[in-house]
Image 1 (cartoon, rainbow, N blue to C red):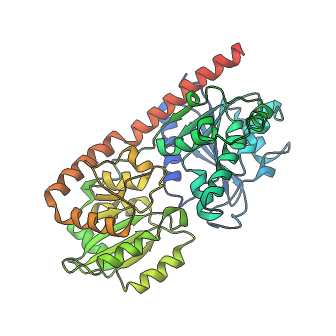
Image 2 (cartoon, rainbow, N blue to C red; image 1 turned 30 degrees about the vertical axis):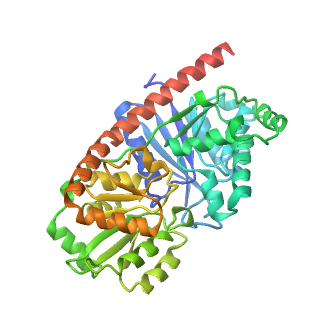
Image 3 (spheres, helix red, strand yellow; image 1 turned 135 degrees about the horizontal axis):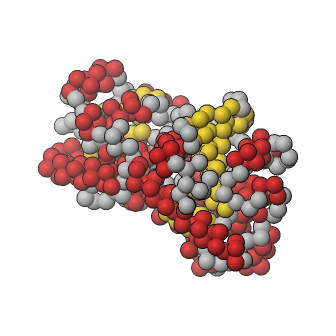
Length: 435
């Protein structure tokens, strides 16, 4: 089975500085060669071209325009890229002839699964259609469009009546993300929903919500424990980082690596530093690695705090690994983080971690390997001070965190993911043959 299944994966979230998304797909393509599985990725690009990754992996870049709003670093493949005969994504799929198509998108690509289910791409046959999600749509919608109960209601209706109805199976990267799938489909979470309209939507796509829970799998992503390692910690490298950013040698170095965007709760960072700037015992400095639509706002806050926050921009993985290993505390502000690759990377690097006590980080973070607190500036500040001053507890939790990272290595994550693909494809094939 593992050498038979040919898969194609589509996403609009992959670009050169897209952080965890890029890392996870790159890991998948590299592992395709180790497992001898044909894996192809279709992503937006500046021009049409194909990049080979060994003998078994490919990345098809489809020429696409930049996103018109939110974050213009991203490009978007849109329905015209696949709706008509001869469109680029159609041609790629006909060339690949995959048994499985996985889509990681909530906006412009999901319709392709519905088109296949409705029989509008007969030349392709009927591959298994997998919806992968590494984020919660309700978090994004509430952050950028409409907050509150109405935003949550709209998110559930869009997901439950439309997006999810077009797929055979569903994979989430954490229990927290999977919760949104259940909340969007299961009747116990939607007492006021029109059952007639819900059933009509699923029937329209020749689908059924029966046994939905059994068709959802959770496959956490993994960390490169060779690249992210405590072995990178060195006095000379730390001194070089401090000198580059004009930080005193006796400062306590905090690090946060995140997309600087509303859904990441980055507003918490300057509030934390405002409190810590008044600390009489330590000189706390925060390095923020990343970029995004709220970067200018954060730069303004950093100027107000007069050097307590330094924005270092996007760092490549090698450089980021050095920063993790030579920082004193890693802080992650987002209480609704889908999974948190960066938190796991910091753990693997031997850096003490302070994070919210909610969200996808709870897939691996706990009170034995991290400081988990309410997402308030006061609680974060207290936890950061404890992580610095309580040396014995710090050593124990860091060692536990390193062990946690090893358990969640990219090798283990990819193996579980491939096993999941094979298991659901076997079930899909059996049901198709008897259906």
